[in-house]
Length: 243
Image (cartoon, rainbow, N blue to C red; front, top):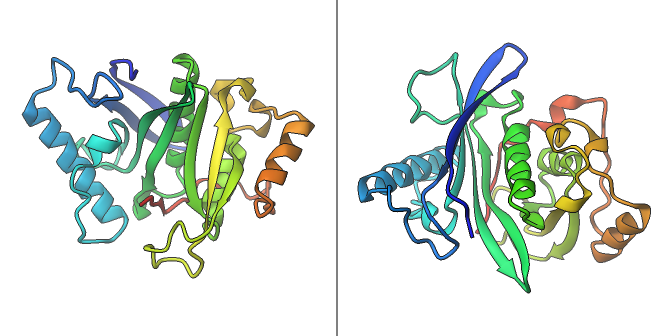
């Protein structure tokens, strides 16, 4: 069950301030609207998220009803660049899943507009969804990513995600990459040792050596090279799109 919440909090990165607004319009995984949510509220947030996704992915194709499938929405707004909270700088949309009695948050969309790259927004939004998962005793956070999206891969690895499945042709309809294959990546929340440092410090998530080996065996193609000294790599995430 998705626990009701609607809150905002401030964070700093370099000299910029940004507001993260968590919007969850549904009271459960079955997508029942909360009692306080009007149809106008739903339509408003749905239009905002659809407009952002179209702009971010540079497409005229409508995402139709993104909140129906991904009702957990984190929005980031750069406060010193806009006073209009509808002008989102970055977005993370997720859904709750329960498979075989394992509770999971699946990240449907994670995207930062080009003007706001390299400001820590993607890292911060991932930290928020992982922290929420821990607080609500969610077992896993999962997502898909194209195998050629190296900035995203580096970011996810830094946040503690590991590849569990090589998905041949998963991005067949996405023409932005030459290779259409993807990875299914996962973080087990029980491996998080310091939720406040997730996506900031590799040591915030500890995977025993035998677990690392298990992940490598499950996804032989998931051996990535990292440039840990280049911190900009971890926030230079243009967008990650899921079909």
